[in-house]
Every structure is written in C-alpha cells, then in structure tokens.
Length: 120
Image (cartoon, rainbow, N blue to C red; front, side):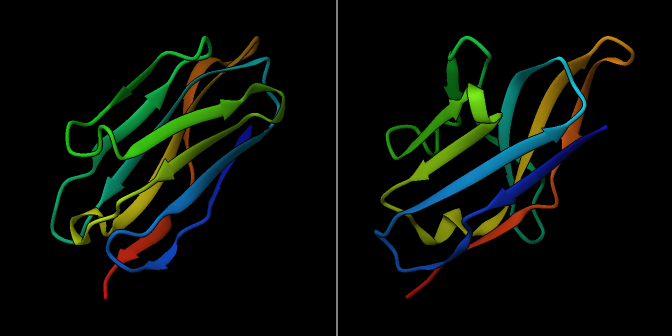
C-alpha cells in the first residue's frame, strides 16, 4: 500500500507564491510518474503538471511559465512551485502518484488534497 500526502496549501494574495509538496510512502519498488491536478468548485479536475522518473515534465497551458514541478527521488517527494498566482488558480490541489510494486504492478494512488486560495 502507498500513502500520498500533500501539504503547503493556504491563502495567498494575487501575485504571490506557494510551494506544494507531495510525499509518497509505504510499500513499493519504484515511483514512476507524479502528477498534480486541481479542481475548482463546479469544475472538472484538470492536470496541472507532471514529472516522470527521469525528470521529464509537462504543464497545463494555463500555468506554463508560472509553475514549476520538481521531485526529490530519494525522498519520494514532488514539489509544485507556484508563482504569480491568480484568483483562477484557486482550487483543491491533488497529487497522483504512480508506483510500481512486484506484487501489484503499476498503480495510481491519490492524496487527500490541499486547498489553495488566491484572494486579496
């Protein structure tokens, strides 16, 4: 079993910054892709940023140039540095971790989410 815990959300003014963390722990052989999603009230969950085990990244168009995803492989943790935040970035942010274990193969695990609110 794999546990995924997000942290770092909060209230920030427009133009401000936050750094989210996503930590994976438990029983697994390898962490593959780590992905940040977000979901605003009344909207569908959308992919924000993704990073592979080799460090390749991709971003939603709406955050490119403002958000940066990174990971610390030794700590099984991914980070999302969010700069120049806008009110439209307000959402619950979720981390999805794809982990491989010999007994279960590759599976996706989700965290409980962390709230980001951008408001003056």
